[in-house]
Length: 262
Image 1 (cartoon, rainbow, N blue to C red):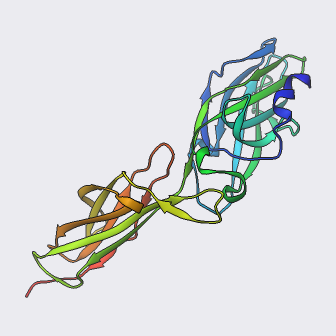
Image 2 (spheres, helix red, strand yellow):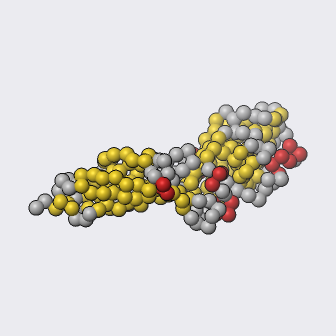
Image 3 (tube, one colour):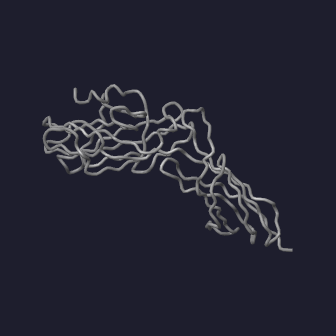
């Protein structure tokens, strides 16, 4: 259809993440067709590493008094007229629409989208994305929504940890080092240091299951982490990062330190 020509030229690329939308604003349309809800990946953020592909589901719920004929979806980063990242299925491939049980007016329309961060994304694509939808009803009503909502696409993070010396006397000082890095999209599987971020040092006493935060430090050049702590009992030390709007959370595997008492 002509009204989809603005996105038809964008086919063949990629990107996406979690999103939940209610009461989407219609940019154009005719009749009473409405987009009720749009969700990607079940409403959870899509966090992508440097190389591993991930397949997520785009789901659009829409209604019309005559029922829904078909629906289309498109995800993009940047401005609608000049996006720097985008993902199908787009304006040429309809989603699969299934009427909601017991309803003659509402359908849920879905599509699977596979994202390859190495081939289809760059680091600048991390952050806020938008969703475009176009829905057709059986009575020829329709609705086009340029920005049905926003969502986040995040770069995966990693943490390393090394606590020393091992073993150590009770009450002595240990040094805990590590590094915070995050995926470099489109650069062949590399991870680069993430500086200036708050990272928690946590400890779990041997025989227990819960980590407790000991202190918070800021990652330095290259994402480097270093601090000291007092060893009081056998247990595991790790770094924990909560994530940001562009980067996912991460936890290091615990590094065990044996504490001697005599």
